[in-house]
Image 1: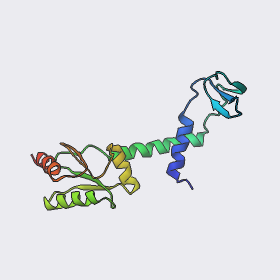
Image 2: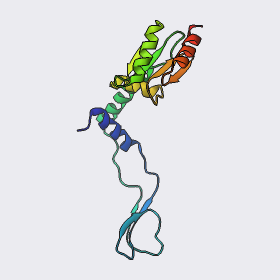
Image 3: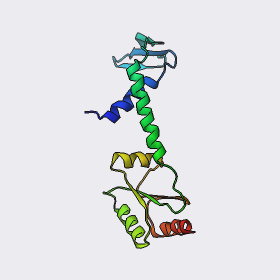
Image 4: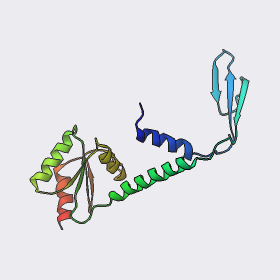
Length: 165
């Protein structure tokens, strides 16, 4: 079963793609009887059918759908506004409960008595913030001075020392 978020993404994906021109699909039967479909004209095979797609009919969105879309866009922009670049002295840690390196990163921050904002990427809000931060792996430490993807004592010491200055 699709969640509301997945349905919304699919809705916008299908409604926001416009007709990019005519497309032709060729149904080709090779000499050995193999049937294949291609978007390039065949050579050395016989075409049994040609389908041409151009400017297919579409319907304008209803007023209620337009309101729904505007509401979703407003929510997305409000959430995006919640995530801003860290200010001087602000530390953010993107982590996951299942990640052993995240536990080491948290222990290092606690040992240095660094306060930080934690985002758990296993939650929808945490994952949304992680995506907005262009995260690719955890742990991800983000400060006003830079970012560290992964964990090592040396890299955390270096970026946190720079942040304290």
